[in-house]
Image (tube, rainbow, N blue to C red; front, side):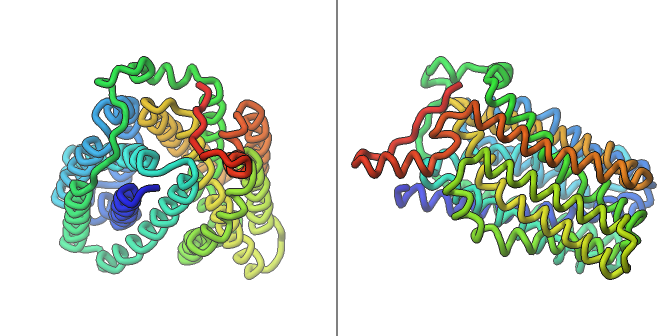
Length: 426
């Protein structure tokens, strides 16, 4: 990586941290703000949360093409402007219509930030540095979410409308500061549609004609459905109803998840870098299976409440350990599968799959976790084991450079040849 690329990567990491901080600053409090502070009711609050997912599903199919045509930086700036307008409007809105429109703008902006920043990481990294770059991104995102939620909670603890307006105003300022930071970035020159490579004119349909990418998307859906889609829905409902976990303990469990990520991210990086990506993902499935067994013990183990609480907190911590292994594995794999001129579309396609899983996960897991305790645990235990199976099957379709880039680099260096990125099969 050149010095110039390193300087741009630092700006990108600042962008990841600030965008996550802004997200953590407000999203955990949206339900309380809409339903109670603005007195718009639980139904409207639920629709606001749904508006985030709907907005993401609408804009993501188009964002990838825009990233590949215009570059990730202009798309990121537009996304940040949308998020800033949405955040400020949300803080001032008092009617259901304005609240929903504002939430849609904020959700659309936040959704597009993900593939834009991911594409910027790809453009400012090499195959040798990409794994660590995505690990740093994940670390900063979780740190930003945790710190943002902590500070935001202190600002709105009295649940006054003026406090929430201040909260959204600060979030707006964060997005505007991020725009100023990113405008100083100078991205490396990469192929756009004007450069006329045939693959640059591909569509999202072309992305899903890549069977290996389709398999990765199926795997990604199961990953996000079985983990992230359960955190604040099915698993929390199960913890309260089956394990007798208090709301304050749920907060401790979420903190344990974030703490495990922050502490373990770089400790597991060496392990992840030196092994096949498919086997790393398969290991994550096994770790999450153990997590679901711990959750099962918490709710149905008939032990003491202290033991149930410890098991439930351990469930969230184990999920965090698995997440630290996924962050430097899955995102670089998406980039390695993409033709150079379609990285934006591949990142957007994978982000779209993630949003679908996050929309379906709570809808399925929430009712099950609250009422069907044993079937809930068994279902998601099987999903976790399915992750391992799908990962090993995916490994059979990957080239050696895609599945085990560290070994390929080591082999080339040992032969005395320059290390060059290996083109991915499409």
